[in-house]
Length: 524
Image 1: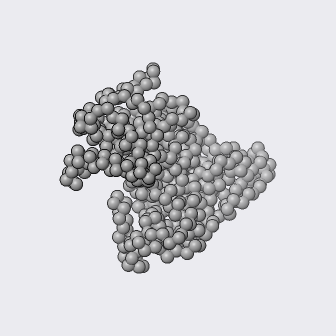
Image 2 (image 1 turned 180 degrees about the vertical axis):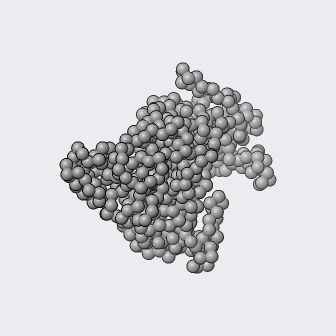
Image 3 (image 1 turned 90 degrees about the vertical axis):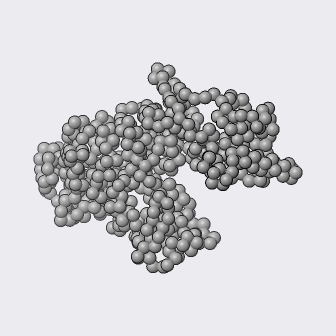
């Protein structure tokens, strides 16, 4: 380790085998905290690349930050790190690394623009594990390459994160240090994943050339896993990285086939790891097995089968379990997965309030969509200070996918306008009727034993119009009821497929409701 001035004192702190230097003394060059150099053009077309200089496990981490132009005409060669920041730590508890600013990737040496920077434990362990002994390594790391204290430049940098991860030569996923039999779990994910190929659109699998058993894709045949295997896998999948919202746009990009997932010294290619998860999730579970791993697999299903795009109208359902520290990141963290025109309409700005960020997102959706299903994301929240037509995504209540799409009148388009002064939103539509009364019902897996059908039957019996009268949006009154109760799922194409008319389906549903209500009444 480099010798220091006689006026300084050297103290060493071990952190997972990483030598962390803590210094006291006015003449120690590393005493000063690192000061970021502002990016050109406000950071709109430039990024910082972190060069991790080579070294052994006992040497202090030394990193050089350099500015690189980042646009269609110039994309530097680098890897990108995807990891969980971990719990908050005081500056005194953080690991200290040495940073310097360089115009080019040169060996680390003394100069004016260098100093220490505190990093959290999980990143410190990642840097230790990923550092090479004989050559430097260029990696983009959000907490180092973005000046977290500069709220003005932070916005443009966050706006580029989707492209930063998408254009990296490789995404490195860091789960953390080896613990709780993680090597066993990683070996299992490797051995399972190489045996199949998965079409993630149709969610169908085929056996690969490395399949050990011919029935590997037979979902009715359980995997031969021991209790120790289940424990190790459960601990692995409960690591914080899997719950982090930001990883959605970091990993599900065009280059995801090149991603590698690391846990301690073990590593597995992401596409193999994901195939291993597919087998765990879709294969029949062992009989009478109530291990918590299976519930965890269900929690992660939305993440693992995610496609390369999403919509704001599904934001709450698609990412309901994902976590982020800043509520504004409920939008910013998935911006790179939105349609291009909406992504460009939402410019991250951390000087804005949460309410303004969410309102801007809704307005961007209105400008680029003819559907207003995003209003289904709105739920009453006593803490919400924004407009009622803007969802409070930070409250993020868990909702049932059954209520995601209501199309009682079919796929129609409308227009919208907003009053900035009044904060109101006006939608152009047709007034069909007025809601005069609400009835409590339960929509959770209705069956003939529940009072659901009795409530519906009683509601229909109070209708003063004839069921054959015309409904304002087309069809008859009974068809309108059926469409509303079934959330518009009976479209014309479905009728054609089953060789049924709208009236046939409506009469069939109405008859079943009456029969179910009659059976319940007789039982009571």
